[in-house]
Image 1: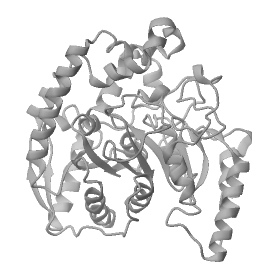
Image 2: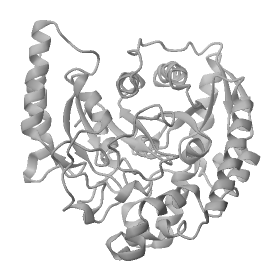
Image 3: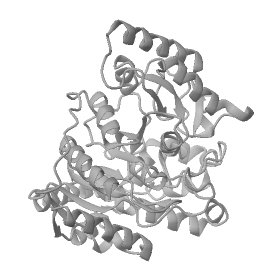
Image 4: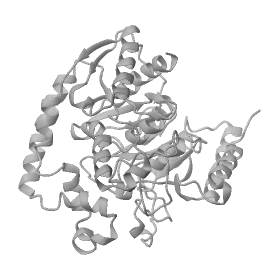
Length: 432
């Protein structure tokens, strides 16, 4: 039985708004505008004027992106009274031009500064696979909306794993695009040197279609790399530190399936470069840039921030310009060194995150547990941001209620390359 875009939209809106309360994956909906876009998509279908793979798809955007006429809260209760955006963010405009139906804006960690997805200023959002667990962040609502079937694709940001972490924990695909590949105009920043914009979707193909529009690239041709003949580097070492046995077992089992299919696997250690990067700055790079973004608030009204978010920003408040510039020079050298080591491979593999999603209750009750879990979830994906890589997380389930993700990465600019590799591995892993 055929279904129009408008029919699908009405079913999704009913699911989002059913039960008398909006689904917490969404912080805002514009049903009237979505209906107009859906009707326009149906007319284009009838007239044979489709604009591409995203035409008529239901796509929400993270609450960091400007949508004309709406307040961009950036997950912060303190911004509820901010002036509405006067224009769409660049990526919102590109999605509209591609025929996508902008469904609304999604839940996120406050100012995108947490990998957990907890935000006391908004209704509690739960992991789709296990409602007792955190959804992951900071693009939490994006991941849950896709996993719950409330969106075809969702658009998030990734500064230290914020697309890949919630994708991994909710069992979907998430992509960190190359820094600078997707325009950031109209996106509230966290750390501009690290921020990237990417899609979350049910498959690599869905993320590839979205990437093509976001980056203004050629439309995805659906080319999956044949596993036989691929050369992939395997990261263990620090990427498995503190990982429980179940995570290590799932990772090694996935690698065994790849090897059995003819993928050439070779161990590679990047631990020395990682240690050098972590010591390059007097405080984590992301905290220094976040301190610059939130300087006035931190100096004058820190009480307006979630105390746990403020504590992380505070780490960067005392860094000097000299230290930051020297750290940046060291970072550039280390990026070049890692690029040289991975150049002979099609991609490098690691677990996306080292642990499964912790329980919500355990993190709400303890600052120590909160910061420990945040650090472990951010650790592996942050490597990709610090070393200026592009990366994709594929589902890597531990059981029916837990997933950690398999990460595929390569140097900046190799987005299409890792999409092809990921598409080939996705088919192999799903058929196993």
